[in-house]
Image (cartoon, rainbow, N blue to C red; front, side, top):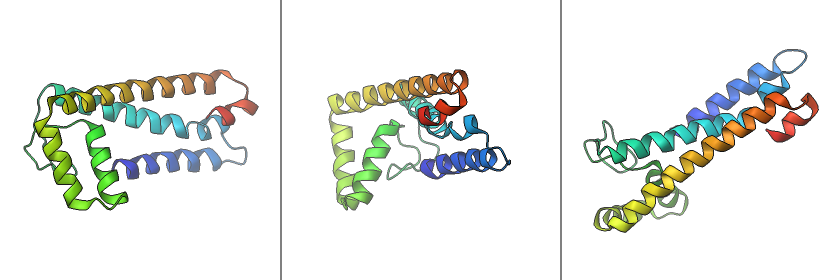
Length: 143
């Protein structure tokens, strides 16, 4: 769902940016920054909700509603490995057991989620600044 939202946001930017006779180069260059902002906030929000020990208000991947919130990185690893690598339900069950049984594994996933979130926002902010200050002929390459 999150990937679909990012694709939608980027497509809207590109459609609006290329609709006029003279394309809005700076807007078209913001596609990667937009994806980085979205995923950065997603990682940070999920990490904060995990730290606050909140319950899931909905199913997230194979984690049922009402379970403790898990960091976004957990969901990405679970979905990528289960769907793309054909691990399916067996992999999901093993990953869940590992997450629940190992405090060190939970901490690693949590710390990595914080780091990815901060890193993505730093990249997004730096890209946005460069896109706004550099000349038009350089911004598309930066983006």
